[in-house]
Length: 240
Image 1 (cartoon, rainbow, N blue to C red):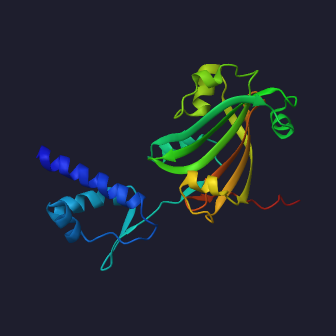
Image 2 (image 1 turned 60 degrees about the vertical axis):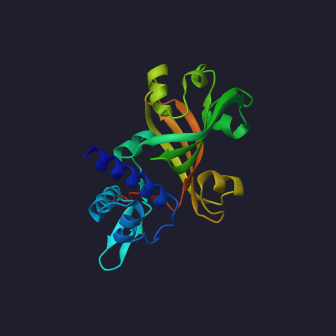
Image 3 (image 1 turned 180 degrees about the horizontal axis):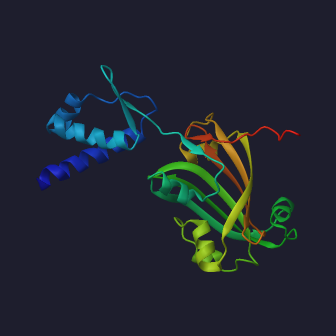
């Protein structure tokens, strides 16, 4: 039993890698072909495919086969961190390509953070991942005077908002966001593991704490093939 369980886990790992490296809509080999390739019963392969289907990574079409399905995540108006958002979706948040340094604020960053141009700011840049898949290129700026030791206590995979709460007692409450369509540079496309002409959303965010003070200014790129933007629109109030 343990051997079969280990074999099934190995097959799931191989199939997961196959799905992640395949284009959206690609047809997977049949259960019979996979069973022969792995030297196991078709039921073992079927169980591994069931696990991928439950995660929304593949979809079965009766009479046609099993197809790769890259999930589209809805980016809603509800204010929450990337890590919290991914956990609520049942995915494991992470990061890679972590870069962090302290540098003088540009005029744009200074105006957004309500500090003087040239004041020191912490700049954090990383690729945010969900279950190991690149989802967004996140870039954010914070006033170094307010968060002096941030870069010492911040780790690559940490939720920034959780660190701000734990180390500085700051609770983020709201944000002003602007969403536009962006053209990725060749470098940005490679880092997000998408084609050079792939669509992307540029989300510009100014986050505010519960005291009404600006905490961060960020400009992040979200993969257009993985995200949809959700907005709630109401008609103007009618006069009596």
